Image (cartoon, rainbow, N blue to C red; front, side, top):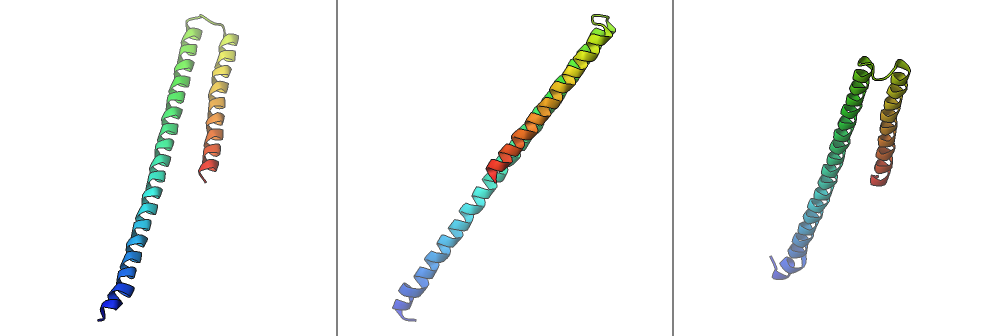
Length: 107
């Protein structure tokens, strides 16, 4: 093997392989980081939705207790129950809209 063969063929090929492997590793790490962020966002959305459901259930329980204790009449109970349910539905729609906007931005 001629020394010039090493300098002009083997060494550049080694450098190209090194750069390609380094580029692949960087791309994979970038995708992995993006996936982790997406998972964290999904977890946060799920936690927030769970909190909202618990809050809605708590409000409905307190409302039912007030109705059973005769603190409010049936008409007020029905109106307030409808209001709490509308509030929960509005929150779910807003969360869905935000998820769609976020997915549109990430694509």
